[in-house]
Amino acid sequence: MAHDQDPSPNAGVANQKAIDDWLPITSSRNAKWWYAAFHNVTAMVGAGVLSLPYAMSELGWGPGSVIMILSWIITLYTLWQMVEMHEMVPGKRFDRYHELGQHAFGEKLGLWIVVPQQLTVEVGVNIVYMVTGGKSLKKFHETVCPNCSHIKTSYFIVIFASIHFVLSHLPNFNSISGVSLAAAVMSLSYSTVAWVASLEKGVQPDVDYSYRAKTKSDGVFHFLSGLGEVAFAFAGHNVVLEIQATIPSTPEKPSKGPMWKGVVLAYIVVALCYFPVAMIGYWVFGNAVEDNILISLEKPAWLIAIANMFVVIHVIGSYQIYAMPVFDMMETLLVKRWNFTPCFRLRFITRSLYVAFTMFVGIAVPFFGGLLGFFGGLAFAPTTYFLPCTMWLAIYKPKRFGLSWTTNWVCIVFGVLLMVLSPIGGLRTLILSAKNYQFFS
Image: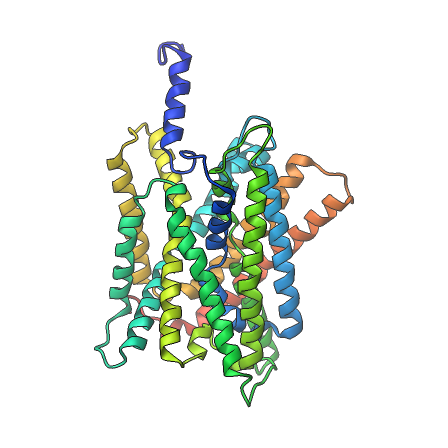
């Protein structure tokens, strides 16, 4: 009998509500629309923007520009779908990516389709950001003080992680909005530094826009890993429902209004960050550009030092934005499935373990960026380019060959191609550079 377990049905509901008020994503729903804007900018504009000129050099002028613009449009469209689907069932909100997945594909299947991919992306990004943060700190140290003794990257990763041991205990999205705002401002700043400094340097005398590769097969592989890099740069959809969950909603004023305002603003900022950096960086350096544009601009030293510090601050914010849904999943599992009591101690232990885990992997595998091109294609393309479209088709069932149907299928085809092709490029890069990799370097 069900009655033995729970004497009054209301106790269960109240208990559920208390748990929801404690979980990071559903706890505070009083965000303003501009919060959504900076959370989205922080989630979207990764340090991946600095490798865009390199991706352009692998793709070439024509294909590169087309792929950049297409990605921008397609990801904006899939983002719009996510924002629309957040409240499509009256009175219910899909606060997490997998809840929407369960609605579209069924309870069991939805979880298995969405959760592994979402976790791969979020944990992957967190590990990469550990390494990026550590490396940028190291670069900052080397630029500011070229004669100091050499400190290993591992130590810088530990220094960087120490910040997260503190920040990850902020309970929910709204409490990190300050960190997130700083990060969003930083991403705009270092993108601007990158393209203004390139412009200042002027087009190099021996600039060459032909493909870097000498052979046909090399060219193809480079093209594919360029695709992966662009796909990685435009992936911020994993956390979009979680961000929208923080916005208040009433039947008269649903959350999609303010959220969409925030998204559009975020996308304008993204365009201002991405397009100038990619185009000007490639225009100035041609195919001699490094995979991080800040390396191509060696001087002036103080500017490069500042830009690296900006990267560090931004990565701190991004790490938190991507970690929050992971914390939410861990805590949901512990509290709802395994009936732990929601308390500070539980949170303190789980979150510290998670930060420690990403730190150790980052230290052990500092060439994680190469792995990213590989994972980027596998996990980023689906969650960003075609999972939203598939859900849309599954839920709304639009008319065959109608506008909506066709658009979604075009996105799905594009996304599947990205998912299949970019890991090939990434894998080859990994194999070629594997001989220089060192664990714990």
